[in-house]
Length: 250
Length: 358
Image 1: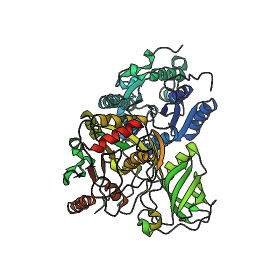
Image 2: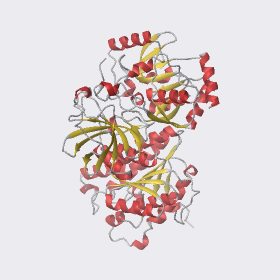
Image 3: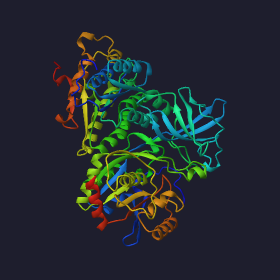
Image 4: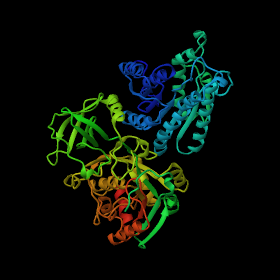
């Protein structure tokens, strides 16, 4: 194992599923989890960059698996959940990170086609809802598990041109709160985490002129999130957390 | 009895036939009534195996069409399977032609990214084979889920999707067919049961197929099936006994795993993996389970034989006739049945001792 491996992490030998794991925050989360000994299943639409992330993790002594799928597609939900359980066992940690902005340059709502809003909701809200239904059921039967929704401050603040994405993330936040309320007492926890602005392709697609020096490194944010997830019981289920408020990793 | 031909909307409205051998009563209820039929302290045990998309359409090297139905994993990438010739689920299983003659080493192509070699052909029938997939790990599962479809039968009136044939709590895809007893259990119902003090525990049992199309092979079913019982489930059984609660198996696979485990270990339950080909019948003593929640079956089916371990055959025949008259629907998408065989039975004490030994 690499020198970064913490074999005493509570995440060691747990089964984790991360969507949108071919790049950006998703890839960084997969790496952070694998370094702690979690068995990771990485999901993304494009198999080539996904395979590259998984190969690198495995080459460094971690365990990661690739399964290519579009999280917005109803017909692959049980395929994702089934293949993941076949590869690493019943899932203990589900991170809904895959997101789409919708068309770029980002249009005003008044100029947004309803089909494009529908597509953004399909990927950012209904996809996570479907996958959570399948996996949370297995978690509730086993009496444990954590589901994470990656959120955005666009879910809270009204930014012009961020309508479709912001609406989907606001709905996803509330989906998390409602799931948490329904699953109270089952041992299944649901958290929303706002990672803040990061230097990723998604950010560049949305704001091409942004200065990367002002943006966080997704690897740093991923480490903060994964450290939180090592002790999820310290945060009330249904909470919304900003990664910026989490302790800096020394 | 008519089979249910497609998925119905609201499983809580599915009918529930309640058979009570203690007073020989037969009662019509609904699945939604299940919480009122159980008591605080009772324990429901479910099978958490997910259903595989185990039907794979393929071609032999000579171009002949075959269908493989995966029955059980023997080792990663190595599956016991049933082979059929041309056709699909729309044809009655017994009318399907056999596969073309294939020797060990023959390759079947299920798609550009999924291939298997015939590792073994059973001496009992050329339909019963072992398939060794060329792809492994991530690529194997991508291929199975890309090309596989749920195994289904001709009494169903439309193609089934994988989401039609899963329980609400399944995880590992190891069941050849839906463990249908658990199909109607919604989370609303399970959480309601929990609030009323009815615990739910789990085990994993690799349910096999129900029909091979060859009567001689059908007579050999069930093939040995793997199971795994968690230590916490055995503890839950112990606690239920101590409370005077009943252990109710959700389905025949759970029954066979628990009774098969007890049979193999001198009456005690031992945690961990095992294999069973136990067939229960009217003279099988029940060492672990007190009742069963399952589907509604024909008297000629092997599941019906298993039910006769829970209730006397005359009562089962009467219940079946009643179900026919009242229009209950059978098979995996059909109605349900609850038999509570034992309550305050002296044998319960003996079983508590058996569990304590384990």
